[in-house]
Image (cartoon, rainbow, N blue to C red):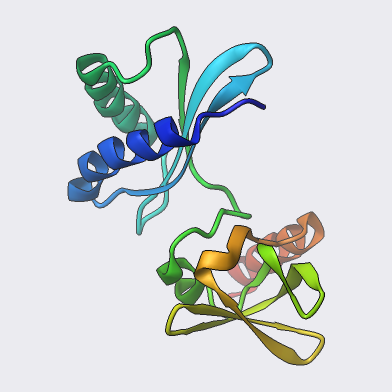
Length: 171
C-alpha cells in the first residue's frame, strides 16, 4: 500500500472538526492505493455505536467538504465504516477507555528488548500507556507507539455472543 502521510494529516485536520459537533469520533483515517484504486477510508464511532445511516450521513458530509476543499487532485473512493471489534487505539484517552481489554501494541523503539506487546490494558499514567503481560506492567510512552489496537480473537467474540444469547433466553 502506498500512502501520503502529510495528506493524511491534512485530511484528519479537515475532517475531524466537521464530525465532532455531531458526537462522531474519527477513530482512524487511511488514504492509499488499494488494489489499484486510490481510497480514503474513515473509521468512525459514536457513544451509541455506528449504523449504516450514520455512515451514509458522514459520507455525504465529508464528500461535500472534500468536493468543496478539493485536497485530493485525482479520482478516489470514499469509504466510511465502524472501527470494528479490534479497533485502532490512537489517542491516550482510548487506552484509558478500553482499560481491562486485551490489546496489541507495536512500538517504534524497543522496550526491554522487544517492540511487540500483547496484554491487558491497565490504563494510563501521565503520557504512558500501561499494559500487563506475563504478570508485569509495562509502561509505553504514547509517542513510542507505532500501532495499537484491541485484540479480541474470533473465538472469544463468538463465546461472548453465545453467552449474551443464553443470558437473554434464560433471563
